[in-house]
Image (tube, rainbow, N blue to C red; front, side):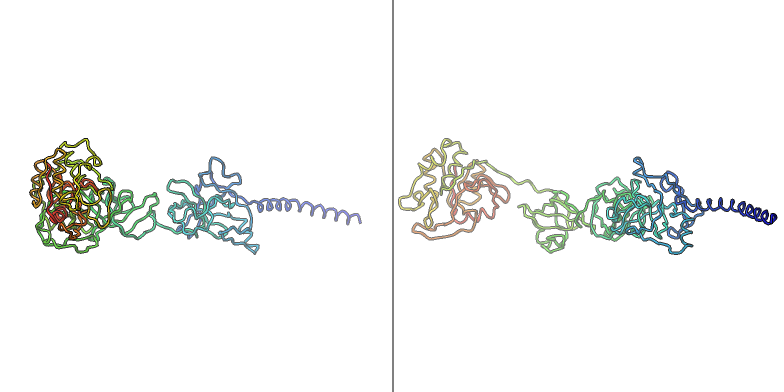
Length: 528
């Protein structure tokens, strides 16, 4: 019995001794399995790698881990920092999660790092505005993808997350960190961005800038080569560096290179207007165009005998230069290809005579004869102390409404149906009564009028109101021009007469309009 008790005691001691190392091993396993953190160097994205087909390469670099002590601090807001991943099965908005339901998968996640990373160097454009940009993989929101929609960004690190998604670590063109974004919200693009088709015409404004052969820094030539030319833009790129580059073509569809859009000015196909002011002679019967939609205006032969001034020109995209033509009267003739002309000597300058007769406003009265007469007298230094209201007191008035004897009708205001005015004879009498020396020129030619003005003598001329067509009415004393008006002629030049109108003031009237109105009656009085 004693021996049996000793055997049992020994057996219990052996069992107790065998349990000690098993307890120690269990604690070790428990400690290892409870670990849920990984470390990373303090520099964003440094020395990280992962095996992934998403970047088209593999790496055997040891997997990096992130320490629980690595957090975003006040002085690191502009850099990428990854906070410790916390075990959770929460589904983050826009971020697909893969939740294992088998023990073997759970053990695999626990035993390996939650994020694998690999250095990268490519560019993307955000194409989906409904994603979140993260500050870390604890899902702290940094921005929204809508803020960078269609923006070109630099990818420096690619992360493969345990949730099955790929994340890009993004930087802008100032090398400032933007955040982490799901790759599904992006599209890979070259450094110059995507091609945007367009059609516009430009001229160079920065001739010292470079036209590029490609986006690898290979220059083609200086933009000065294209000075004063209009070139076509067929499309453009919005480069990662922030600039927009136009793809340029000439009028033969020959590619010219890439050029920064800040160095050009958009223009119409004909380019912009250049002043010229040269006289030209027509040498070919080519078309004169109304506009640059090529609407016909006239043939060159129809204007060939005129004195033609090319006031300006356009360098058109089609390679031709077009002159903007005017005749000697200032009338625009149209656009013509400069190859149909030659530059010629300027014609002798027109003789310009202008006396500078003062303007006297007749107001609401019917005293156009009296105001014109007083203007001419004042120019001669006569009756200068009189104004129209004092001057009218000496005006001869017709006793029978015959304007050949004096003023007919009411002079203070218009009276419908009544002829109001006077003809040259009483005007001569009125002017001489106030100290003038007036001569009746009724029936004189326009050349006679010009001769008087050339001799410093203003001429009172009977025309029509605003030089409109005459309105005739027969009265007992003769032909009454119902829209009669009187002005002072005090100058002339080639194709024009200068008048001082008591209603409209001083102005140049075309020879055609003036002579048509004067020739209705040939009434005129010279003030000498």
